[in-house]
Length: 528
DNA sequence: ATAGGGTTAG
Image 1 (cartoon, rainbow, N blue to C red):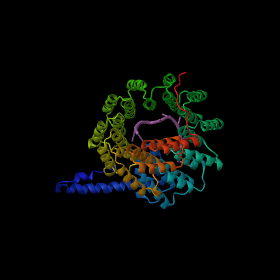
Image 2: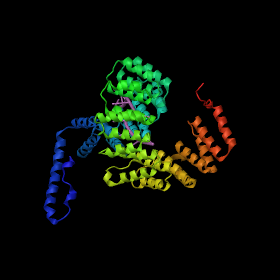
Image 3: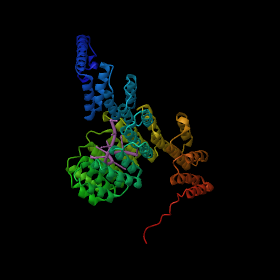
Image 4: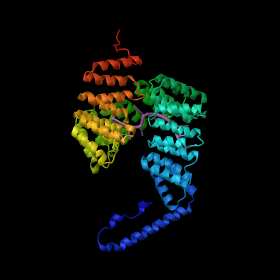
């Protein structure tokens, strides 16, 4: 609506513009009147459905824009206003907008009721604010299956698989009648945790309930693919006797490629016209497997079908070439992209970074930061830049970038950024500075707890630099950590003690491993 | 109000 207003910035200059300025203000006032008239003519419920239809059409910005105007025009809104608006907030990832809407809901008394609260649970979890999500869930008086499902998928989305299973168990205890939404999320949880037994049990439940088999079947296929059981995935596909569902076929094809079953992949690919989404997910599998040959085949298919104008596909190609060490090819794809997004730039920087060319990575990063690139670096960009610096031992540049991230771009470093930065400082041999950083982090963190990954980074820095005192402190923190009683913990700590020559402690770690039954059989070659 | 494809970056 405001797009048709003249730009006030043009009014600068001579006094002859005065008349024009008056005209401009008059236009503006007319415009506002017009806007109010328009709003008054339509009642709240039709505006609410307009909000929903913007959201369904994939235009969260339009939803928020209309909402702001509605809020200005009339102070009272209904809960049907807020649910689509929360959905838009969830999509847009401006963390504070959702909170502001929540505050407004409380002010208007519109946050009560299961449906409103479920929308809040969903919004907070999609924003990564799990704590708030759980808080809202606890406040729901009449919890129904949908609010439970929203909580479950929230844990899943935020990488908390174990907690998601805990929610499922709680639903069982509370005798909640589960739905196909529940099953779908639980199957996905089993896939992310790679737990075969539970996944099979859920498969049985899917068969018993017998509803929505195409969607649930697709989940089952991707579950079996992720645990490496392609024969089971294939069985599900055949038993459903639905051979043309694009989503299901894409799931099966990318599973085949991930498990290096190229024969079946090609066979299945011939059952549908190639589509961008399928090629992109296949490319991701090629990147993981460093399968340059099949990656090149996909490049050819994309070329023949005219898909090279798709920037997402090009990003996938760059990533594949980068991971396969083909930096020249990655660069060629990058140069040909007409509208480079932040992902394109980040993929290119990372391609240089993983190939050890920190200088080229930084050069590309600086080019990206110039205004004419039209994009801004985000937190993933900084992560790949920092990891390129760590990899190539570019200490000063790494420090500069870490500072720039906060000061110039206002981005908050996450655990991964700190891990990378500690790695950089470790390359400089500076455990003093690492320790100052750790102390500063412990001050701001509640109860002086730091994420496990940070202590791991500190410990390996201490191993590298033979810092016995600080290393032993980090080792203690790591061993105290709950839920990390895995072989990798003892191996990590044991490697530190080996580095500083404390062989009695190395032995103690080995004893710990034995006591907990974590010792693996020694490796041996497989020929007879 | 919740659910299917490791769509692209670590």
